[in-house]
Length: 408
Image 1 (tube, rainbow, N blue to C red):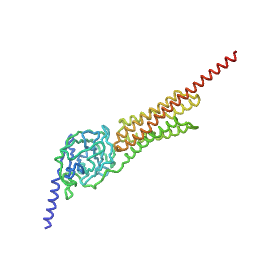
Image 2 (cartoon, one colour):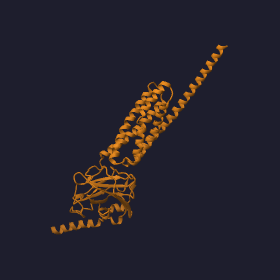
Image 3 (tube, rainbow, N blue to C red):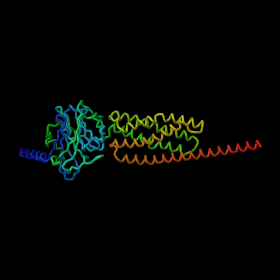
Image 4 (cartoon, rainbow, N blue to C red):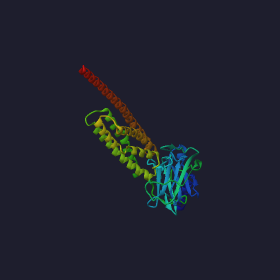
């Protein structure tokens, strides 16, 4: 009786696995990078839901990746590499072009049983609950097929548990079309491990399921850089520029200097964090970093130019060469920095579209107020100059009249 029951249970397990079709696609110079996909019946019928995929590669690779999409930009990517404890780290990322993809903390992914490193092979069995839509793209699993990409880098193991670990540029990559009809079927359970806990393929040792959803230190530093730079350029510097033009009270110059000094210090700190992140993530050649360094170089000596402008104005009551350098560097830098903030948000897609909207609204309001204050300030200055010139003319005429009468 017990044997009969055992046979029934085993048969049920085999039947379940049999209906869970798994489509495999192998790539690489030696066809040793193998990717497998299963779309459960419920996901296939509705077009949304969990999917399962496996990434399997030799440990001679530093990292291996699979991605949804036809190209790097906008792709929903999954990178695996060796962890510190001899297991596998799963790193969901978003492709942002021909630079290192950024860690995607919003991804809902889970490493399943059968994941690990054994006999020189890395294996990651993954459940993905957010592969229908992601920041920058979507995929319907009701379709007959879809475009995917893969990439890999040969080399030493990363041995890192950090899902935002810096990875070097791949030396192998391509795209392919995955036939979903060969991957449909089965219930929403791990299709790569049999009901008795053994792997359905020569994958790796079982591991405790883990989720990649917590904020990493790198993500926190990127967010800190963004907030500090944004506060400096779209709030503090415009406010300092506005009050010096529209207000007039004793000590206004020093209030202006104090506000701008606060913004300058905040910006310098943001640049330091930005460079740290860019070096770690190999992003020094990106447009955001390059323009940010241009703005920093423009603005580095702005406090010195401001002091020289103040001393000149206090002595002569008029603008000099240092005045115009200080004024125009400030105007150009604020505009470039506001634009660069938008570029940074466009590149760092992990911060989501809502931050771009918030940034755009605040930058638009303070930017327009700053431009209006420039127009107002220049109009007030022009009026003051004309009034002074009229007064000088009147004084000259009066002096000439007095002189004429005295000669008579």
